[in-house]
Image (tube, rainbow, N blue to C red; front, side):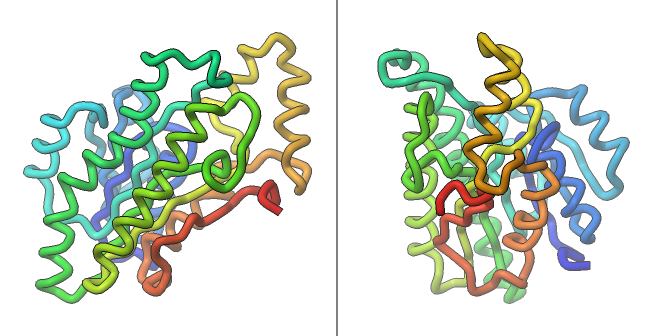
Length: 250
């Protein structure tokens, strides 16, 4: 059991990468605190995976995050998975869209880290354990520019920078922080974007075509990397933009 005895919190755990990661971490022995804004999704997750404690949470609500942090034991790991994909160029992104994307994709992770990091650091100091934070970034970021991902790419570049800064600040005490950068993953979010395209069939073909491996990633392709980064196996990995992208960045 690679995560035996660890307490790990995952945001946006109701579906997609967050859900697969919650199930994978629980299967490796972790106590998983699975949060999401959608209660129905959390109910189905709790029914599917043993060792998963579900909590409703909006990562834009600082008071709710603080209350959750006060109610839980110190974490060993935190995976900030919540995010939103805005479609369009700079001319399609008004200030409201810019502010919403940064509030959710960047400030959401900031809020969770601010709330839970003190407890993580104190636990590490007391028992000599390792702590790990993963922030969800993307290959669409400072790694690579993709069409119609203007503000999304900007937020995910910010996430990479934030992760590197946290890694630099806390490396000496053993706290690791990495940014996870998937390629195109077959999730409910992606399926919604495909369905909303003018030509859904062509849209799916276009998403697949940008993957050199010739297919979309599945959430099961991503979850093992999450387990690794939260486990002590990755105790010498920090400050990295970890790419699981099917070759897009080649």
